[in-house]
Length: 109
Image (cartoon, rainbow, N blue to C red; front, top):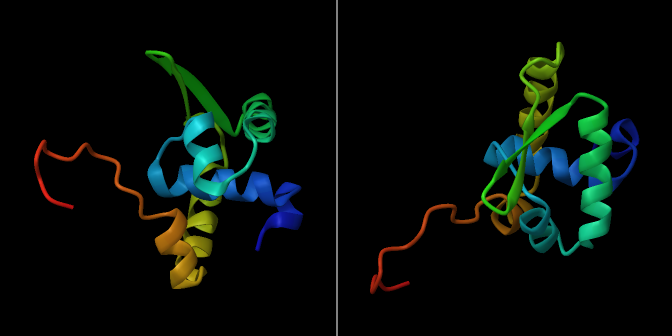
């Protein structure tokens, strides 16, 4: 939907992922969309250099979130949330409804 606005489909998917989950890391995004890690890394670095995203280290992970100092952060997030609401249900179920918390030991699936 906003592929032409942000440059390519990988960039679009990354922004939607971070909008939905609040944060993201290279391997998680790569595995979700079946995109190579190098492509994800390249786009995350581009967004970080552009001031849209910021990164912090958490253990061995490098987590990316929206930059709170980005002056158009709220407008960008609102646009991305509207786009998430317009996506087909199948796509939302496939990419944007992954379990984020650990499951209790022994709990049936």
